[in-house]
Structure formats: structure tokens, C-alpha cells
Length: 202
Image 1 (spheres, rainbow, N blue to C red):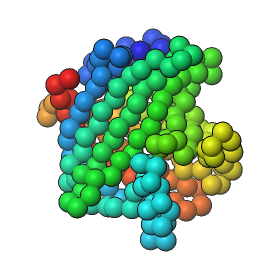
Image 2: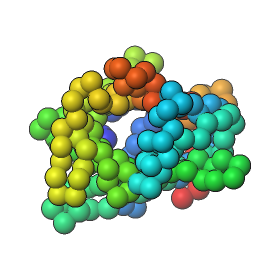
Image 3: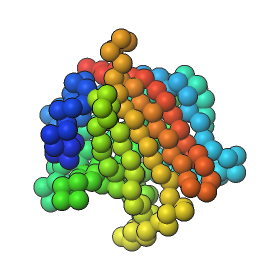
């Protein structure tokens, strides 16, 4: 369980339902289904980039409210012995389904999650996982690179898309909560979404 390994003792400070959510193994995937209350993008001229990113199942130009959403987290063991978590996030707009997929492993020495975004991989980002005092999981991005075949080119800080994720659990309604905000230091918001979902039977 890579997330338990990276968080160490702090894993037990997560809300119990988040502990279940992030205890992903090859025999224990996570499937969720819910609604994105809001999905928004940034400046209008960024739409061309977002339309291009669709090819890699990365970002997308659509926006809206109350968008059906599914998430699947599955695990496999790589040839080098590392555990990899595959993230399949699907947003079901009225006329099209968009995806935001990623592959995660960990660097236990640096205590970071290694996030390869897109399918095939287009971007790479370091991720830091933190447990908030209320039991939420907070995720922050670090150094980023663009992937060009076998080449990984560092992205200057001013061009990075800084990511902040907050994931929690609503005990009253029995739903997982998710808030994602992706911003650039110069351009402002690139994408944001806020949603609720429940676990489906495996």
C-alpha cells in the first residue's frame, strides 16, 4: 500500500473512510461514482491547449455543473518490483466523456509520490501527501517535467501548473469529497473541480 508507506504513522490520522480509500492493492481496487458539482477552466485562450491535451487523456476544455463522474484506482507490480496505482477519472458531460488519467509510484527516500499524468504520459509531477488536522488528505505538487518520448524536460516554475487537492469524507451524507485546483503563477486558474462520490462494489 504505497500511500500508507509514504504517510507513515500519519496514515492513521486520516478519516477512517479515507484510510479505506487509500488502502489500494492488486486485490483491493477502489471504484467510485458521483457528481462533480462544478468544473471550471481558466482564460478562454487556454481552450486550444486543453483541447490538445484531450489526446493524452489529460486535461479538457469542457466546463459545467452537476457532471456525472467515475473514478477507478487499480494496482499492479512493475518489473522493478514497485507498486503502481493507475488513476482513471472520467467526467461524463452530456455529449462527450473526458478523462484525466495518471500513474503513481513512490520515492520512499524523498517521501514523495511520483505522478505521471496522461495516457500516454505527457507530464510528470512530484506530489507531497499531508494529513490535515480534520482528517482530510491534502496533496500538493512540486517539481514538474514535460515528457517527450525518453526525454524528461524540467518545466520552469513560472510555467508550472501548481496543484492543490483536498479529499475528505462527509459523514452526514456518506460521501467522499474532492476539491482540485490547478493554477499557474502567471495565468491563474487552469482547471478546478469540486465533487462528491461514493464507493461502488468492487
